[in-house]
Image (cartoon, rainbow, N blue to C red; front, top):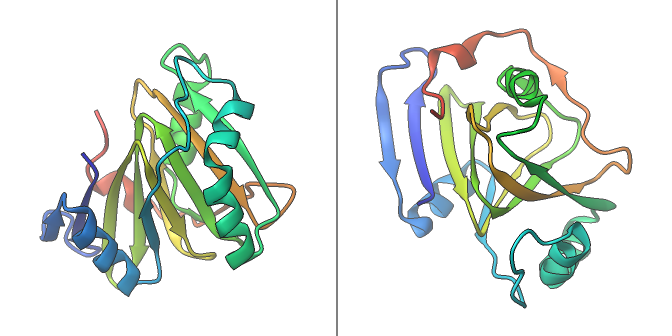
Length: 180
């Protein structure tokens, strides 16, 4: 189940707000300029769908985003527990960073934890199947895919070169809950 937990960025043990209601999550995130939506495929994807099948099933939603925001490219990424690089990638994503473009992710299957650091708070968003999250450019954040990652996501980019991270060097991410 998708969820949002908000903490103080000065006192990690201070829980400020929490909900698993999609409407409440969307309202809280909209207030800070973060887009949260629920998408549905226009066809059955079956077991282990190929990237082309995934894109085709959500092309209508991608086209809507492109028309609205001018995004230039998109792809599909999958991460499985048997990926030899999973530990290295997890550690990299757990470091607080920003991007010069929006970070747009749609979870086709599985889950991940996005953590945003802004306005004196930490917003932990547990994204699961059918969740779209768009983090505005230059927002400090990190991502936890868990120790046994198992997800497929569509990534949408402003920049045709794709994902470029600017790491802040702040160790704040180590003070907040992670996925098991």
